[in-house]
Length: 85
Length: 159
Image 1: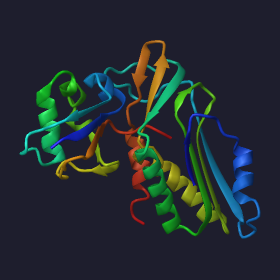
Image 2: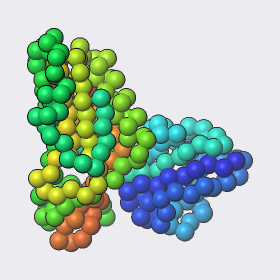
Image 3: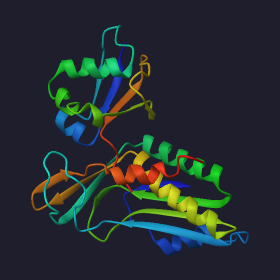
């Protein structure tokens, strides 16, 4: 399974990347499991996710909770609370 | 209608275009958000005291931004009898005094126009995927989300 990961704002800066395509193992079935797996991959990703309460997630451009399933080809975006307007 | 753009907008021209020929409209309500020159949001990382903001850069999530704004517009139209809605949100680098966001609502009666406009800006601030980075004397800082914005949006949850 491959999924497209996007990082925004200071998550992007801390992770040192704005996007990547990853192939997590089959047991990574939810957004929460994907978050844990990405954190374990390190290389800055762990810094992006250092404050769990500030992590917001969208799958295919819609807000989801951490128990949302992840499917092959999904676009999963991680970002801090929004500050527009 | 939703627009996400780098360019500035002309408030008068936008209102004129939105209401042209629609004689059922009895009232138009507009909210214009501007870049302030003081940072009062708690900066990410360490707290710094109201260092003046030179400029700010608005990042967004192209695609999701438009979807979220359209969803918020649809929700406003579901709740109030609106003749038209316009939301224009800018991104990119903006300086103090620049316009950031425009919300315009039109209805037969002023209550719906006022309430829908207020709802739209409150919801937009907590839902639309935009992030502000301010340039201050102390360097660049990402603006932290404010609890008061969440509280403002929560007021509209009941309906």
